[in-house]
Image (cartoon, one colour):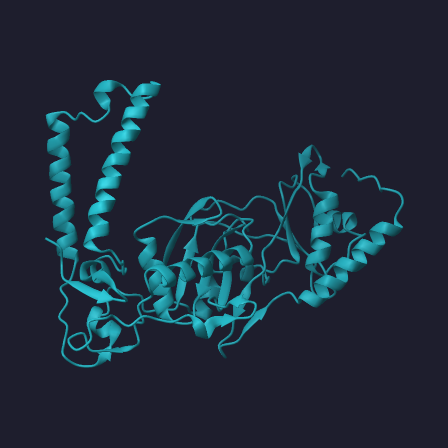
Length: 377
């Protein structure tokens, strides 16, 4: 028996999926039955092919023992009871209220923040890749299913269609601008392992979180975990290991990993004498970090270059430099799209400055006719 259905843009929406599973899915009864048939046909074909190719034993293909069938039935019954108990009932009122008050009157299911936490990304993932992945997902979600506008006024008794959100206000000539801020999360060992993303409103954040509960979300080839994030600038600085080391991460910084014991700041500065470093502040920082279990971060340095172009040039020339039998690994940090309380976002690195430095590096490389030998520490 299917739960109550709500129509939206010529599609059928399940109230259990809106509230109980925290997402909104447009599935007609016809498409649901077709999907079940296709899934059963695909599973049967796969097992037959696996048996034919010798990957599965004939007894382990589609035949289950009575104990397996009994365990599966009890597990299915238990999951259905848990889902039914966790699914609140919709008490739709005959009055105009914001959509989220009808769908989630207690405020315990739908997203309340515009921020989400992306955990488990690759350390070399750039801010452009992160933003593009989420903007592409939102555009597909709006085109195929529609994004529920949680703040739109709605009377469910008088209007059967759930109000949806249009993405036109955030579409520009250069493409969509659906991510307002992107802060990188740094681990105690100085490596990026996640992002804090801010969307224009919580309806977009709720669409991302709802879909992530039903299918895996990939960044590059890796599956990442998504959760709601309550942004607090004071708490974020207290938990930010980069801030504890006096750094604001951007793509003009490079971390030197796998350094030999006894290596000093002066040793790295000596090897980087050919490259332009940051004109102000300390240029070589020895990373200080630790975890809750008392493990210290391995010896690592962060170098601040004059621009991202100089950072890339140093990586091209010095990657894999062997010092005392160890091969130095150099990884460039990603840029950030920082959020300010006045609602404006600011890119840490100016593209014009980076372009000028890139041209200067190219000209200097063309003038050099000899390749300098690398020093050994």
